[in-house]
Image 1 (cartoon, rainbow, N blue to C red):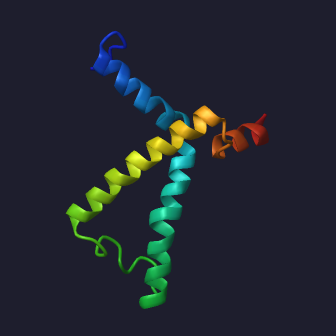
Image 2: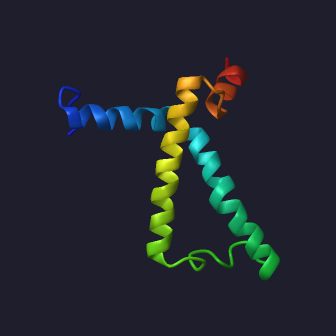
Length: 97
């Protein structure tokens, strides 16, 4: 499946490499898109940040939104890589080198 000589393997590697390269940025984006709004919503409605945890969407909607985030994140990583847009990883390289 991951053999680079097979067309399917090349496609999977080409798709997964930018996700791996920008994993910190995707992790931070996940917090901005998913966790922080849920905490704000919980604080605004009940006063407890985690009060709506696993209750906001039915599982089918949550899985669909997760797939949409994965596709959108993949596109974002590909565009950032091609255009050399600085992301969290480049900031970490500058801070740590």
